[in-house]
Image 1 (tube, one colour):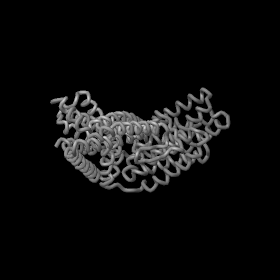
Image 2 (image 1 turned 135 degrees about the vertical axis):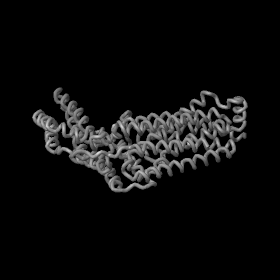
Image 3 (image 1 turned 30 degrees about the vertical axis):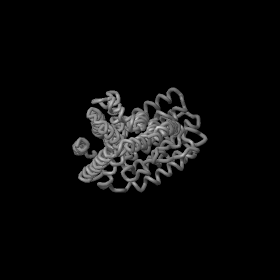
Image 4 (image 1 turned 90 degrees about the horizontal axis):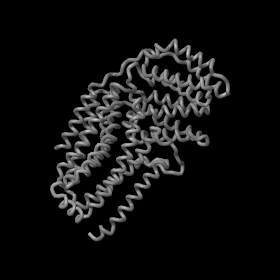
Length: 479
C-alpha cells in the first residue's frame, strides 16, 4: 500500500531526526541587568518629557561594554540582538528623532527584559522559550499597558508575536481552543494598540492570555499529547490528498497518482529539512516570522486552487459528463496540466500542515521522555494511516455522483478555512495590517476572524460556491 509506505517512511525519518535532537545546553549564569534597565527607563522618561536622554544612554553603554562578553557567553542570541538594538537606538538618538528614539530604546529595553526572563536560553541557539517565560513576557507587556506606555506595549506585542512560535507547540498539545484564541488575541492586540482610540481594549486581551496560559505552564506531557499533533495538523491535508487520490483511482490514471504522491513526498522532505535546520542551525523564535509567511501564502494559494478543484469536482458530478470525460481522454484519463496542478496542491497542503507539525514536535522535544515522544508520533501517524486507508476504500466504493458531491463540499469547506487562516497568518507576519472590527463575528472552527481582510475574501469564496451550486441545480434535476 503506497499510502502506508509513504507515511511509514515519514515516521522513520521523524524518529531519526528526533533521536539527533541535542539536549538543551546549560546556560552560563545570567547577568544582572537591573542597572541597565534603570538607565533605559530614565532615558525613555526623559524623551517622553522632551528632554535629552544622552546622559542616561551613555551610562547604559558603559554598562554594556563591561558586561558584553559575559552576556555573549550566557546567550549568543541575546548578545547579537542587543548589539543590533543598541545600534538602532544610538542612530535615532543621534538624528534627534525623539519619537523613533522612544520606540527603539523601548525595543532595547524589551530585549533586556526578555534576557532577564530567560527567553534567550543558553549560549546555544536553542530558542526554546518556556511557557513560564512567555507569560513573564506577557506580564511585562501588561505593565506597559497599565502605565499607558503604548509605544513600548506595541513593540512588546510585536515581540510576543515573534516568540509565539517557540511556545505554540506547548499550547496546541494541551488545548486547541486556547491556542486559536491566543493567536487571535495577539493579532487583535496589535490592531488595538495601533489606534489611539482603541488602545484600552488591548488590556483585557493580555489579561485573558495570561489567565488561559498559566494553567498550561506546569502541565506534563504524555504520549497522547504528541500523538494528537500529527492527527490534528495532518487531517486537513489528508482530506485534500485523499479526495484527489480517489478521483485518480476512479479515472484509472496511474500517472495522476504518481504526480500526487510526488508532490506529497516533496513537501514531507521540505518540512523535515526545515525542521532539521531550525533544530540545529537556527532558533525557533528566529524562524517564527518565516513560518507565518509560509502558512499565510500557502493558505491563500491552496484556497484559490481548492476553489478551482471544488468547482471541477462539482461539475463532474454529472454521470454523463464523467463518462464523456473518461472516454475522451482514453488512456491518459487526466491531462498533464491537471496532474501538475494536483501535485502542486498536494505539495502546498502538506507543506502548510507539515511545517506546523514539525515545529510543534521540535517544541516538545526535550520536554518529555524520548520514548513517549516517539511512541506518540508513531500512534498519531498510525491513526492517520487508518483514516487515509478508510477514505480511499470508501471513496472508491461510493457511486460517482455521491463521491463528487461529498468531495466538492469538503474541498469548498477547506477552501473557506484555508483562506481565513492564511490571511490571519499574514497578519501575524506583518504583511497585512492587524485591523479588527467588533462588528464582525469570530468562529475559530471555521477560521473566521473579526477582520475585514479575511472576512471579505472568505465571503467571496462562499458566494462563488453558492453560484456554482445554483448553476448545477438544473443539471442535477434533469439527471
